[in-house]
Image (tube, rainbow, N blue to C red; front, top):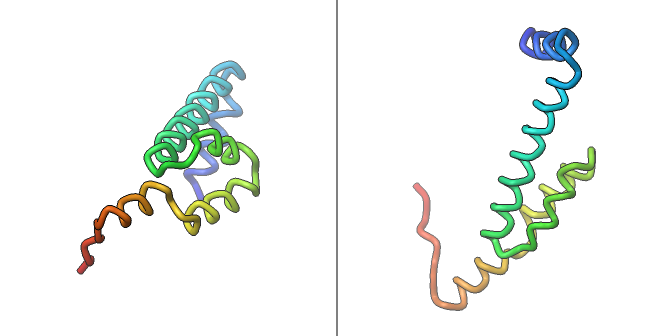
Length: 86
């Protein structure tokens, strides 16, 4: 909890432009990493824009966890089987 208070205090005590730059870098990193991941799964990377919308981002992550991934289905058709963990 103290870490959250320190973060809020940091943004309150800095120049607004600095906090906007930090937020922009974090948002860019999140969107780039998410679109790279979706592209590797065979899903259109534009779906990553759902991560920007509060509330809908949790639903989108849950949806992507249970949707059929085209690359996985293609690998199964070619005879690939996942190795068991444990």
